Length: 246
Image 1 (tube, rainbow, N blue to C red):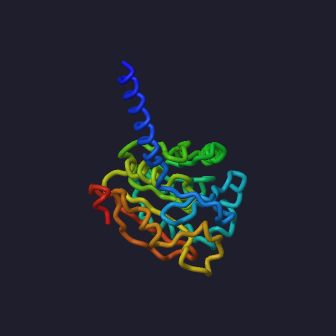
Image 2 (image 1 turned 90 degrees about the vertical axis):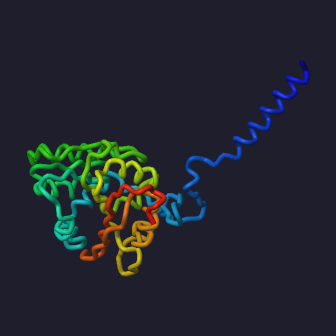
Image 3 (image 1 turned 135 degrees about the vertical axis):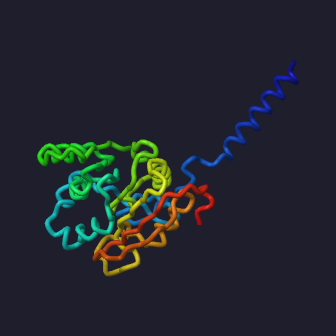
């Protein structure tokens, strides 16, 4: 009897030690005490994640000079939107881009996704003012855009991806939401260009975006360089196994 109790206790001790060796779920990420003050101290594949811009700065997204600085007209032209498309504007903010895409999608719609409920309220208020019927809002979480599976033709993130707290989990969820052949579009300030007057953690190099998309059902389709300060980096959803995406 005593031997049985002893063996049971021994088993529990070894089991506890074994569990202690299991990597944490967030082992994809590294935390560093010394880091850029504009970042959160959390790194993904060597890149520090930036702080999210709060809803208090919504007015900055609507600044009159944004068209000159970012040429959003040229950006939208480059997307080659079709009237029937369902487009998810992830990290929609104040809806600046959503409301510029919506008129081009008379048979489709824009899903304006944001993690901040205050931004969602701003977009809903604008929709009523503009009497638009094809802009729908979705309140997301930091790991899930809350988009239905296999439901959208395009996901676009404008100066957003570099702020995602869980980029791998979010990309995984966004891939599930994309239909086969659908596109995921990253618009990011060029990290390779020191002349782009943006803080370093709020910029991304093309090769870094491509690196971070490995392991997902995405294939780099093209990078468009028509904007003053930003890349337009486009990926297409494939049916390949994630490990086959080189």
